[in-house]
Length: 209
Image (tube, rainbow, N blue to C red):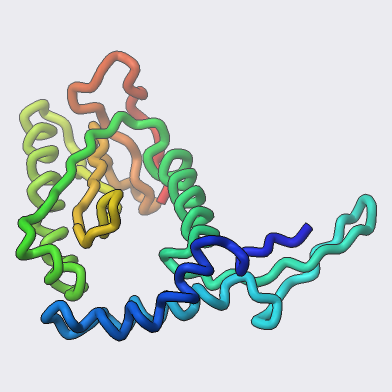
């Protein structure tokens, strides 16, 4: 049976209240919502609509065919967002971190900066750069103190709201409890663990990019 996402509660809420929401957004003393927010909301209303395109899927065993409507691939779409989150998490666990012990650090910001970072992508990247350099510098100094050669690495996920959906850009950064050394073929190889527990992987594990 085809998934009728256009009949979901979320779709009905957006469809019935989007225009009112967009019209009243500037009333809060701001210039209104960023254009990408309005664009994503409108594209969300086309997600899963057969008229916007579909793929025909056929079972090689029973020859049954179904039509699968294209998704909007928006960042706030439950269908596309959930799929990307699962794929990215699997890639990080299996292909990037490779079982290495990691330390998570979270940076939250003062209220007066949250709206500014939500609107200004370049400023958001600049703040993240300062945060990442501080964390990597700390990990690098730990490595040098232990006599370990290599470079510290990090992975960051930017979360833009809290559970109640107010604007709150903040950063979740994972720093492996290890350093990596470049090989002649350009690959990065796990060098040594920086004081993690006895279950830490042994030296020589290769980190995929």
